[in-house]
Image: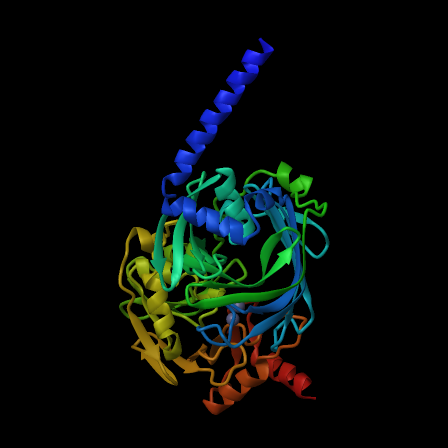
Length: 492
Ligand SMILES: [Zn+2]
Ligand SMILES: [Zn+2]
């Protein structure tokens, strides 16, 4: 029996070898070929699957997206130091620690700012400077999980272990390109250098709260051997045409013991969905002028003879709420325009919503192209009022100054030239009331230096504005003397 069994086994083995050999003769599909080539270039399938943890220390630069001097966001950089990424690939967990130091005059000063953020499966979190952990919104978790796969190790590991599938191999822009789709349905584009067979970039369509649908593209260079695998030492990322960061690894390790799990308090916390409703208060400043406050960013409503104008649309929810408040305060006149102070995301984030409500945008001329782009951007991953009811943006661009006046109301707008805060920022002046409205250039109650105040004062003098009171977009109304005193103190 034993002999027969052995003979059967040998025959079976021979059969298997013959079958394998016949399989091997069949040409591999482009997908199998690509997976094999990339896996081999990265160190082999077994070596990739054997990587359970990954650590990277790095340094680099990060751009000031959303708060740059110009809408193109290419002038202000943060130095990135103490960058440390730990990843647990078996459980889709990663945590990133880094320190950002502004290389420009930042309103909080140039002190280093530590940041800790992570993703644990579908749970995203941030850890504050005091060590307290906070669970992030579900939209952030979706985005951060996508960002987690923007590295050759987790993405190729998913392909090799069957947690993702690779298809649609093609040539594009000098690269061999394929689609990788995870079990969740999330899709990525993987681009391979045809010479080295190493991943050159990974891209995906992700949601950004301001840009809406955005192409996140992560590029890899400077591959080096780390344990049994090859890993990129240089990683850079962009959102569409906007550069986000570039880092260079100083050390990389695989299979060191790491704990990349989310803090217990975060895992125990309920998922964060929806958003807190906007709080809008209305304070009448003068006849036909209301300051709409209630949260960090205020708006101002102006009643003209036959229409209303709004100043500032900070974000979607607040803009919906201030539009509703405007209609409640003056129900018989249409709201037709929104005046935007500057392009920073926390001051222009509601413009799409304003456009969807039919408002014409009044802004400094240098913001026009950026806003036209913003209003055209699709928002399929997280729909917003404009994606639900698409509409062309109407813009009235202001160069140095503009006046909007009728029998009931006069608003003068001035470009605050040379501001170190934003190169395309407007201030509003109400000559009948000697009131100046400004955003971010002087913030009452701020304990950090008022870096932008001297330039604001220069511009007020240049345009010969006879200001008595200032209505800031952040903070309470102040007397003009407070600005003068603050500038004196800075200049002494
Ligand atoms: Zn700003
Ligand atoms: Zn602000």
